[in-house]
Length: 118
Image (cartoon, rainbow, N blue to C red; front, side, top):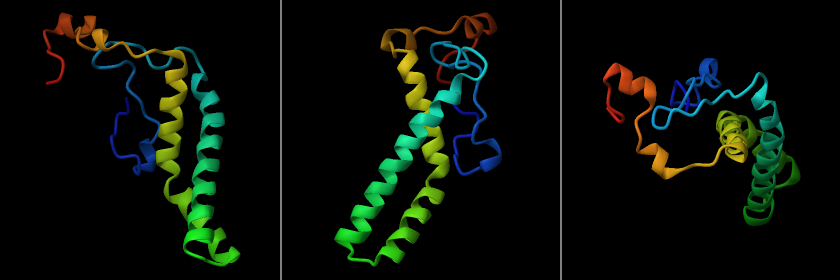
């Protein structure tokens, strides 16, 4: 889905292919489509923060100040992953995965004589 597989290359964290290489589905269906992913990102960030709080405060028995720094560190460290996960979840609200269509070669690859997966 993404041009660069490494989410920690921050300059290209949002660069996406135009369409799926397996089934040919177009990722950017309309301008500003992924603005809705901000809501998903908020929910994911909250889940990471709550998990960090529970683990650091109740399991590791850290102080509230230390727990705060653990939460901030988690959110900053996982920010690129959270952003990509939010986009993936958002697009899955609108596009259903069909395993049969993943086996079919996209039209543009057939025209170029390329094979999927190579």
